[in-house]
Length: 310
Image (cartoon, rainbow, N blue to C red; front, side, top):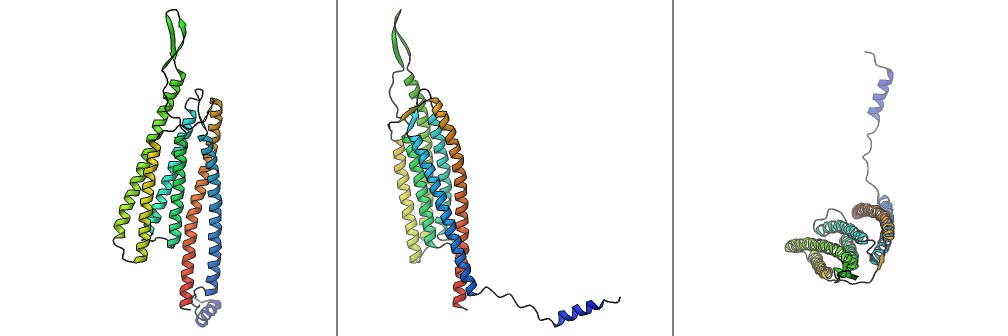
């Protein structure tokens, strides 16, 4: 088969052309520029998180303040109590998520899966501790806003009849019984959650102490000692909070009518949906922050290595 002259030309060019040079790594100047860009990105994500977190806390504070200032009336029966109960359940779900994230960072102090430095991990753990504490305080505030049990006569006299004094069921007694049922249920649910939190922290404390025994490096030992002390402090706080839950409360509040309670319930449901979206955004940005910090530190290490061995 006769080949086209262009084929011979292409072969000749391939033979005489120099082989492509191996791709050289980035220069120090390029890495410095990349480090600066990544630092700006970390700062941007942190600021976005700060703004989202502030927005969440403001909305939550308003929600808790509104709910703790009111109570049920005979007209609303247990509508407000149910709103408080749903809000507490949502707060406990948030605590569970924070607990999981916190545990990851505590374990990561020894077996790092990211390139975050110790100070950043400590800051993350402190953040989760503070958030968990806030949520528990909000739950306790809601619980304390539930009315204390009161002694009412089951029947009250309505006046004289043909055959003596007539009696009817006391509406205050019936309302008190309805509220007592909700208060007891909420108290038991909170105690159960706090017991679960204490159990998790206790397991974590035993694991930390077990791992601490294998550490000989003084600097690492101090980090683990601090983590153990912090965990012990949290256990003591949970136990104190459990005692607070078991104590009765008698905070004065405004009783609301059924229509006001229904309108408020609609508003709270919209606020709760918005809060869930904000929380999802915050957690997504938190994940992004960890990724950005990991990338930043990896680039910083590459730059440091190049500067040591140019």
